[in-house]
Image (cartoon, rainbow, N blue to C red; front, side, top):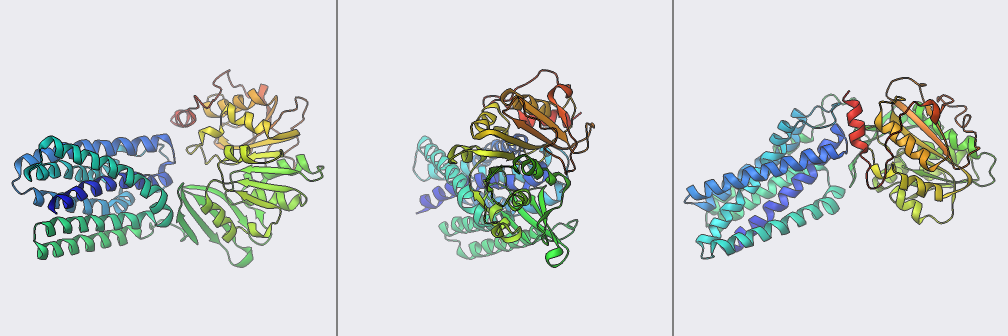
Length: 493
């Protein structure tokens, strides 16, 4: 029975390690973006914590006579540290950071120390099993196998079950309490039930206090969201200002304002969203145009196209079902009968859609630090071109500078021009060296005139490729598309 308890501890500890790793990204993405840099920081810090925990756990195991007591203390420390993660995150990571990478020292305090405490249980469990009659090599093999199984289970359970169903902060609180129950099991295995009950009650109460504190909204928030949910992909929030149908609702994905709608007339609010007129202007003479938006956001642009082209069929490829749910609840997409959502990645939607489109608009680039690289490559643009009918038009909403030093902007423009013979770039504030929304319009027709496609919008008439002054440079491909690196390199100037 004792062996089973400690084997379960080894399994649970490693499940908790992977849960901490997966959940930590949900706390960092709103601050630093969903980028390879954030993932790299989290993974390296958790591995550093495992390194420290295994070394410290082995050293302590050699020097302690009561190994069950050592496991209890390690689980107690892990429970406290895991419960404190959201609170420490609020204290150490500014909510409005402009950095592209979280500070590693703070990451180690918040995420590395819980991983270290959990990892330290491994050597102690090996020692307990070896003292109980197993050979050291067999005990080590069993614990290593349980660690692998726990890592797999923790990753899958957190990703596919816990994150979609519960809030991230509450999950850290629940994990801390669960580690308290694991400490209780260790004590019960040693017939110390009274002390076990006190210990478990203490850690559970501490987890609840820390979780309640961490769940309190930051003091600098202007207003509480009317909708907030962690999806499998991001934190989805809706904020509202004003009263009744005159109010404005804003959608935020992680830390990025993705769109807004005025409820009285479903009008767009942000300047850049007037770019929906690219499709209206280009397709207004079509009998029944078919349009695809890649990226739903607040659905402000798809709704406007669907209403201004009432005979059109507007499809929106949106990967996140929670974004669609927010659209139905707060952005009135249910009132637009010629609009439907395809719950799929943009490239999957292009492959699955029957028939071809008259217009495709890509609005899936969240700022400059959350770039889905697979939507920037030559292969992607080739799939878009294959999905277009003759005379079709393409629009991309990107964030960048009209500057030859902006490697990502130039690479995307040149990659687009590799596939489409006609490309025109429309910065919202003209050809200034400032970070701004830029609409890239493209056509497979070499003779197409795209200079007027954004008439009636906030955007300029634009520049052709020859006017961009981008030196011949990188063409992004599925094999090599360092989109985040190019963006970070320029922002660091």
